[in-house]
Length: 202
Image 1: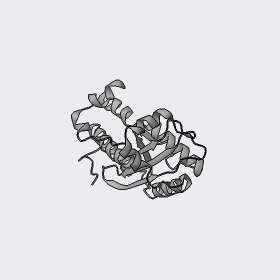
Image 2: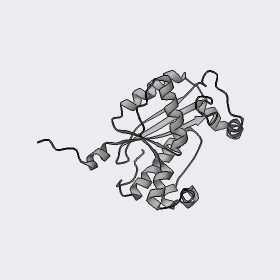
Image 3: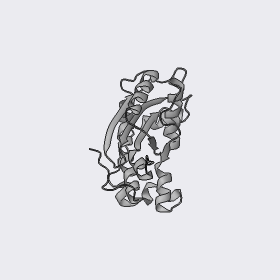
Image 4: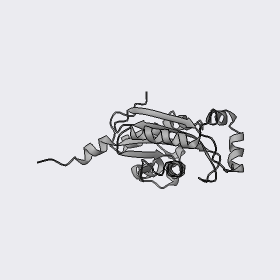
């Protein structure tokens, strides 16, 4: 008789894909995703692989003035996220291939997921017609609400436990931010009792 896989083994097989995007505005399809990066982690916190690409703006896309005013104050980061951009269709095809090579199930991890997943989902569906994540997405602050038993406002960084945010650096580059938020995610998982030994990100 074949025994069904346990819930614990299924959880151990999950691949957490911490993802960050940089854009020239807040609206997918009107504004463009100019940089995309992901850091994939096994359930035990071990880094599996990273992906990072800069993208050309979409045809007919319009940059948001307030977003560009922000970038004007971050010239080094803007230079990094716009260097050597590639056509979006090529980047998303490469990204989907990379994702499928990670194993299943894939879980998108974002901060905030509502923003980053919105762009990634739009681009994957627009250029490929499919999204390897499906609807699997975790928002780190929402997860922290449950672990802390706190309100949304009380999951701002200044209220989080010091051991969660020690070493936090938000440099406004997609890969840098994807790695930074992955460390926070794994620390929250450890606090929730679903991760032992911390995050090993190399």
